[in-house]
Length: 498
Length: 97
Image (tube, rainbow over all chains, first blue to last red; front, side):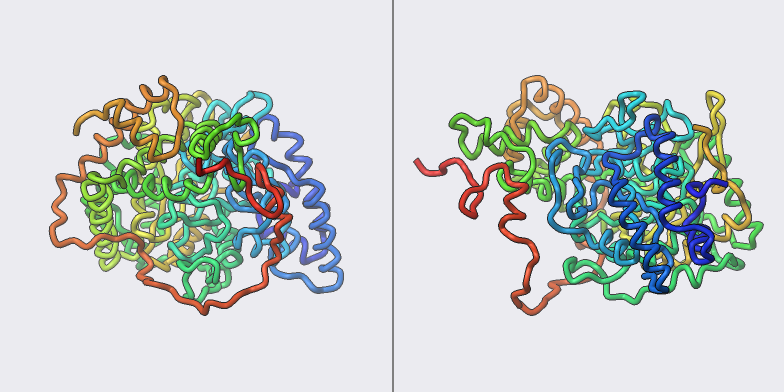
């Protein structure tokens, strides 16, 4: 078994036992990257030199018996949306093509404080806007001159927006990764790439210096090979941060230490609305057999109804662009980022704004900014924005009510398996692919996607994801359920042939 | 829901501080109209006596002491990412005639 193919837990044990060094491990990961990255294209920026320095420092610490944490010396991939001091951060957009941050995001700072090694910055949909990584301005997959590919079938998208992180994990181009999730951007690519992706409760993880998309929905989380690894990373990145006033002061449980595979007697709600029209029959079959597995593990399966969730996508496509239009106002061509100011021959200030933004933003960012400006503009605010905030209340209430009756809710992560490049060129069609992950974000609750099985298409195995949703602050419950499933099944251990 | 007009797209682009080409105006008019049409389904939901939810934390006005802290970010650092920076200031085109 090559080192790069191991999990965080496995390498941490090998490091602890002195069987390997962090430098061995980091070199193994970069050898793997040399081998498959030209095809997969998971990374925008690779940090080999820095990574080896970090690995050496970790090995020194270990020699002196002074490691920082369980993940000391372990190579982690970081979505290119987290600011990394001194390492270019693009958000997948041309407008930040040459942007080198002067501060560090809290999530990544916590990783480095725990001794993790930065492998590189992974590709994503521009400003995390998209469900396929196709909206990235960067053609990272050199062999195809395209954005990131799905490691299971190179003709298919990895999902998005955290498609680079998901593909990097699936292709063993890192040991673990972090991503962000505003409407499914961790869970949907995790499902498409056959990995484990967790979106924590809103407020569990600090948003500081993570490039903002929709601030009331954004949440960072682990993207890993197993549920165990997810628990390990969640412990590292969680916690209150004085630089993010929406981060919670709630105590952080020892998610990894308390992980247990016993779900006997747990009530698992199956909402009929997630199993209706639009769901691929093959995906339906696989998720239902995964649910049967949970029943076999002696969970109690309870059919439930959530009629309001079908409106969550419409709520999302008002609230999210509204917040986007506000957050992306900072890209003005004056303080940082792409600017026409030097080229400008007598351009007015207004023209510098309009031309810099026109040149720097891609089509999806422009669409969402304009949609947001529209729903917030005079005469439309009440009809769209305020209405959406009210329906958001109803969606949240529906989750609250459901969790009075059940401990967990299980659904497919996506209605289909990974689709092909260019298949969803109509924006609304693309938006629909997130219909099962989106409702979780307006409600603020945590959810995990884990591999539930495979479908065979075009002679390729394509992963199917199962989503386990918990009540607010119920991370331990969803991790336990996922751990129980992974203890009883082997889907998460399967590897793509690249 | 009615279809957006080119005039409306131009107005929204102005609000958004985005210069659009004629092709973009055409394209976005159609695409935004179909999204607005879709989200219009919310109009049918009864929300009388429902309070809006802007965030789910339940937090309201998180205060801290207004203390000056030392920053390790210098003017020189800030200048590195600025398109034009002069004498410790961002350069902008003149605003007044």
